[in-house]
Length: 146
Image 1 (cartoon, rainbow, N blue to C red):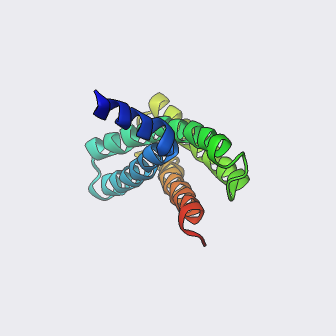
Image 2 (spheres, rainbow, N blue to C red; image 1 turned 60 degrees about the vertical axis):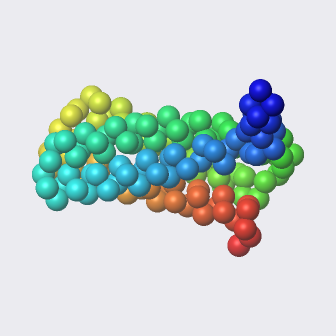
């Protein structure tokens, strides 16, 4: 029981909760981008489905990581973490772009296969990953400096 108490204390007090959650949006947007590129190259519906599901999960995990970041910023940095306003703006953009792309794909399953929407749909995956990677870099600046 002592181990569980120490583990719970470490997860909720000692270690920032944001650092436990932030890796999911980065990994999921990276996987989504990989799958959408493979789907384009192989003309595979299954790979496009994998990209879609990864982006949907990235939307949810972005929300969780963002809320954890706001919490940790308030508790650990008194609201003044480096680049906090830029990170909030970029995380909001990532959440909106991933959620809108996911919702659009949910409504129209053939976005990747229609010539009129193919480029825009694929570009949304590129932008989501670019936003997540930039956010990861800015988070590293907090820990390791510029």
